[in-house]
Length: 93
Image (cartoon, rainbow, N blue to C red; front, side, top):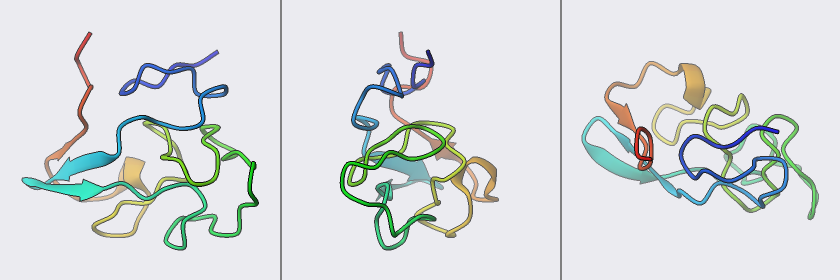
């Protein structure tokens, strides 16, 4: 079982990540939800889970998901070139 580093939920049983924003270059942006029109998989069906992180359609991808798209540049969130990316919850125990 794998836990999300930012929301601390079990990724394969939670509906999605509980953290809905990401800080990028000093500004706060809403994260793109699984199955959203801007998501890498916009054709998800209701009740379907992300094949990587387990987030259900309409919920936020979990931290480190290969499918999450950056809300600023549109590339993969885990490997985009945006600077100063910060999530609430990282490093907080």
